[in-house]
Length: 387
Ligand SMILES: Cc1ncc(COP(=O)(O)O)c(C=O)c1O
Image 1 (cartoon, rainbow, N blue to C red):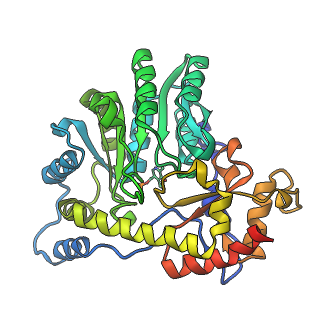
Image 2 (image 1 turned 90 degrees about the vertical axis):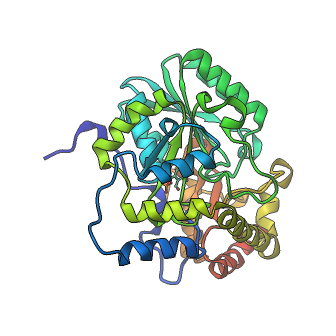
């Protein structure tokens, strides 16, 4: 038996692969998830579901109406038709790609960018084409529009801000430029904003702030700022006609997210102000730990190009002297360095080359995990940048 051609060549995520074979005692600064406790409101909502007598029904295909309303209110949009609740924003991405990307078309993805975007394009039989980012990993609208002009077969453009893996931002001007370029060509713009609420210095703009709900589809999630990745609950907000075909895919895939997850999400959204303030406090503490324990890493990350801190990733250039070929990864010196850090330094990071060719020469260090682990991991990393 051989798998369908659309999955041939697809491999385990490089982030998961770095974990395989890690020596015991290795600290992982690789996974991009919050390591602070699940907020109490969600804990109580989950317990209530467990304690209630009676059936646990499927519920509506479009999810609980109060959850849809809570997401609509969170995004200041007016209609339930503009919200699609999904099993994590990952499922929103899958549904949107399957619904809007034809085989043979092109999907523009950030390079470096979240590893799923190219895979999702290939699963549609489309070609992912990376567009470059500005220094510091910020959105460069001109570079994106040039890439769009060079690829008239483009069916979808994906943005990610604050970015995984670079932590880079998108200015209002750049968002407006990209939205306008996509609208004029009839290309669906998807703005992945799952890290947007995790800001430290200033609140990043949303695509919808500048282009309205018709300007593209915005993704949100319980997994990052709401501190609940295990709920597997996310959403897409956008024009009803952009979401309608994606709903068909999501329904075929999984119907609606699990009822306990929906209950947890309603509780978290109802207490959004307190929950998000607390999450930002956790994130600020992590950025402060970096400054105290491993400032060499932030200096090397180029502070002038990074005026605002947001998200949970540090995007660090590999010291030039360390970028050498090695038997462990003869074709990928960035991976070779990440493996040395793991096996000799006791810290797992993610080699930037995993996020696209332009990510080579960098490492992604996740600040999301438990604070004491982060502190120890950073102590182990710091000497590699200072000697
Ligand atoms: C940029 C980005 N988008 C989407 C996702 C998927 O998140 P979830 O499915 O947990 O909402 C992730 C997860 O790491 C991510 O980093």
